[in-house]
Image (cartoon, rainbow, N blue to C red; front, side, top):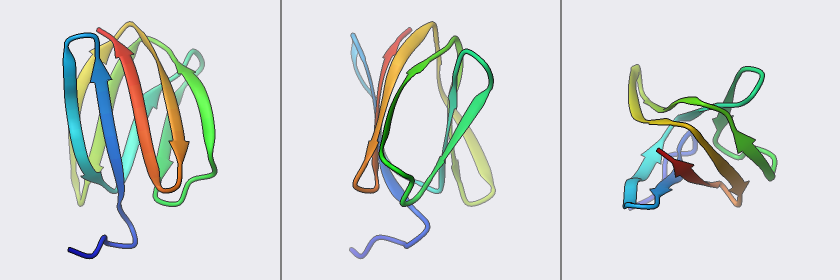
Length: 86
């Protein structure tokens, strides 16, 4: 299946296992200062997460995947990997 140009692959992993794996239009990540929005074809980056909700947007719907204490985000090659401490 061809990937929509406005979507990208997200994997959210915790010490307990896979929290989420799939496609979305936006990934919303808590940082120590604010919420960071990751969109398709985002510039590669690595950053630490702050406490808060990790959410995705698919179309008009927003889904909270996990409430985290801390974690790490890696973005590259139209994929985002999030390691979280729940």
